Length: 240
Length: 257
Image (cartoon, rainbow over all chains, first blue to last red; front, side, top):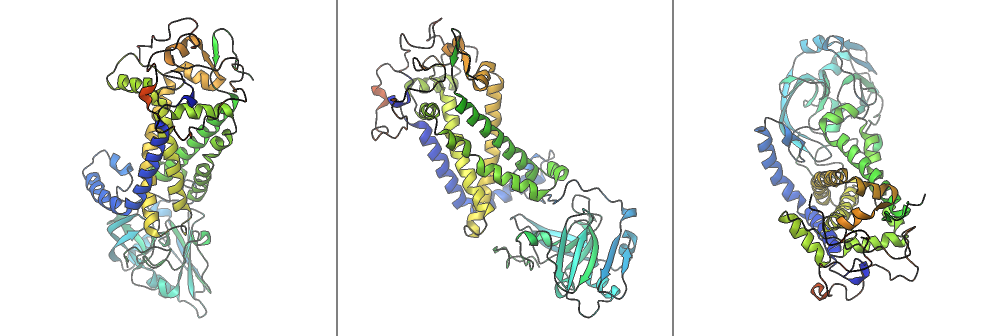
C-alpha cells in the first residue's frame, strides 16, 4: 500500500470533477425554469427579512446598482441643474424646484434590465420629456435627443419620436419617493418601453441634435433602439 | 531557491508547483474581488467603473486555468494530480473519521479532504468558465442558455466563495502546511503525523522531480476504473521502512484536529 498515483485506487477526484461539470450543464439547461421559481421564493423571503441578507443572494429581486464611473459625488437638491440646449429656439436651465413646478405624471411599468433582472410594477413620476422639448422649441433639422449625466461619463440618446412618447419622463420620483442618489437622483431619465440602460441616471443635460449620437453602452455594442423584447437578442415581455 | 532539505525537512512541492499555486491563487482572488464589486450593491456603489471591472473579471477568469495547464509540463505536478485523483482505502477511513469525529485520520501526500476539494474546485472552474463565456459572448448561444448560464454562474460563485474561504481557513490553521506551499519543504515530523502514507521518491528529494523513467501518472490506464480497490493488500496499514517518518511511528495520527 503506498501513495504512488500509478498504483491505482479509485479515481474519485476525476469522478467528482465530472460530476460537478455534469451538474453545471444540467443547471444551465434547467436554469430558466429554476431561476423563475427561485426568484419568487426568494423575493417573498426578502420581503420578510429584516437583516436584508437575502438581498445579497442571486435572483432575490430588486434593483441592482450599476455605475460606469468611480464613486459619483451626490448633488444636493438645491444645487441641481438641468440644461436643455442644442437645436432649440429657447435654451433653458431648470433647478429641481422649477421641474417640480411643471405638470407631473405618474406611470407604473415593469423595469427590465438587459442583463436579465426585472422589477415588477415600479412607479415613476416626473415631467414629460415632450413638455420640456416643446417649451424649448425644437428647430427644423433636429431628429434626435442626446442626454448627458453629472457622473461625467454616461450618455444616452433617443430619436425625437421616441423622446416625445407619453411614457418617457424626466423622473423626480421613483417608487413614490424622491429618486435617491444610488438610483440616479435627484433627477433621472425614465424610458418605460426600453431596456433600463436607456433610463440614464444622474441626468444633467438634454441636447437636441441633428442625428442620433450613440450613448455609452451603445458604443459598446448594445442596441440604440432598445425596445424591451425586440432588441439586444432578448425576448422579454414588453414593459411599455 | 531550492527548498531546504536536510534531516528534518522534506521536499513537498517543487518550484513549478508553487508558482502554479501562487498564480492560480492570485487569479482566483482577482475574480472574487471583481465579482464582489460587480455584485454586492455596497461595493458597486463604492467602486463603480462597471466596464473596467467587468473586463478585469472576464480576463482573470479566462486566464484562470492557464497556470495549471502550463504546469502540466512538470512531471512532479502531474504526479501530484494523479495522487489527488486516486482514492486509497485509507482515504475512506479519513472521511469516516472526519464524519464521526474520530482521531485516527490516515492520509497519503494529500488527505481525502484535499482530494475532494481538488476534484470539486476543478469541476467548478470548468463550469464557471463555460457559463462565463456564454454570458460574455452573447451571440454564442440562444437566450435561454444565457439565462441558464447566468443562473449557474451566480449560484456557483456563491458556493465557490464559501469553499475557497474554507480552503483559506484550513491553511490558516496549519502553519506547516502553509510553509510547505511557501518554501517547498515541510517538517518530517509534521509529514509523519499528517501524511503517514506519503512516500517521497527516494533520491529525488532536492527538487522533487521524478526520474525520467517514471510511469506517467495520468490515471488513464484502461484498467484504472475497474481496479477493485479492495484488492489492495494492506488497506489502511502504514508500510514499513521507507515512510517519511524517520523519527516516529507513522501510524500514530494526530488527534488534535
